[in-house]
Image (cartoon, rainbow, N blue to C red):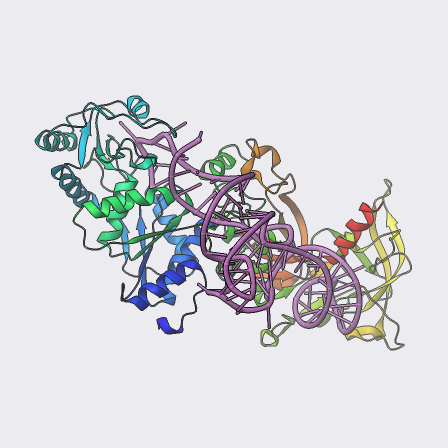
Length: 561
RNA sequence: UGGGGGAUCUGCUAACGGUAGGCGAGGUGACUCUGGAUCACCGGGUCCAGGUUCGAAUCCUGGUCCCCCAGCCA
């Protein structure tokens, strides 16, 4: 197995070496979220990394909830996280763990440290601890309580557990080095007193272990070989190693750090995502504009495209910002292959074909997916009155415009060539209807006289159309780096959501299932909204627009004046 | 300022002393019943200065710039 693996990134190289040297026989990784919020695209990278590594090297990957701070954790988050990891297509099998299940063992390991003279109970207040810690350039000072006897520490720690002291009055600290240039080694806090109900252990504990103590031990208890985390934990590694060194754990996992994923036009900090929700810029964690897995899923992104994306962005130690265009490319590529094509008119303009017999209906054959013939074809009704897209007609078209204009011809996709004979306006001068004629000889792509009709537009037969709501989603922010400005909310894209209430859909869309996805020809990929769509009131979300080279040409023309 | 990290096309990433390559973005063209898709082509990069070497993105020395750390959060 390991022979066949080509080292792809630096972590794979490390693992390959460890397997070859015999340091490990199999590898075990883990994804260790804290259940205090929803997972986002950055987590997806970590999930893919850990699970894929395990898959690739024939090992396993654990899902472990790092739930040592009861303040903000909840079962709702646990459930959402499990749902999201599964949705991405990963399976932790029986390897589901909770740090809170280790509380008793963790307590014993703390006692072991005390007995070795490597941990002590400190009575300093939080403010005093901060003062004693020193600064980046000045060493800290030792706490006056640092040299309590082992017996006294044992007694005090037991009584902390028994609830004899008020919250915040005492902590257990590691006895390392108050003069260390690494702040994390200046006698880090191991346990704090917090009388908060834990969503799993309830009232059982009033002391809770800190991350730096819990994480290495949890890893060791589970036999994790490679403990992969993000860059900001780099200078926690000496502490991670110190804990494992000084406590009787069965093995010695190795911490490896990689750069977290940042995406342009996106924020991912939990605080910022929460602010967007609380201040009403979005509707919730699963708003399709959110970079959360739940939001992305509702938006219509496929798990396959997310995994492909995570594969493509790579793994390195350099801080970086990935262009969101990369993500958009990945969904387009996936959906192009898989999404059935349909016709839908978003901003309808009625067209009456004057020389088409009244009452006549033809069933035209339309291909479901030109990329995949096995998806077959369907019939779409055609009649005297159809809707076309408002933007597919211009009274006074610019150079290069291929669509409909007075006296000009265009092909109705899978149907006939029509010519615009007349434009009907209301008293305000708005175009309300087009009168056209059709050429009966042009069905099926032909023009018997060989004339070229460049423009092909989509349409929906008016009497057969199904009405529906379409939500056009776009990037949430107007600036590339909303994560770097204080007032990021001032840069929320006012056009990140445009709701179109009366769109005309081809009849085959009437029974579209929630969650199913389609390409609306010439427009983009859309999915039936999982939350708001109802059989009698369809709601489609735009996942991503198709690449639009005409829009690009237009934009350039405008920029050039 | 002490410590820990990092610098390769416009963005992400590969090259493990031996031809700087891939993907995305951008541009041009071909093709097309989606101005979609596809295909082809085009630009464009090793942070700087020295050194070692037949040969350096890679090793050494010295700089520069960027990120992280002073929670009883993770």
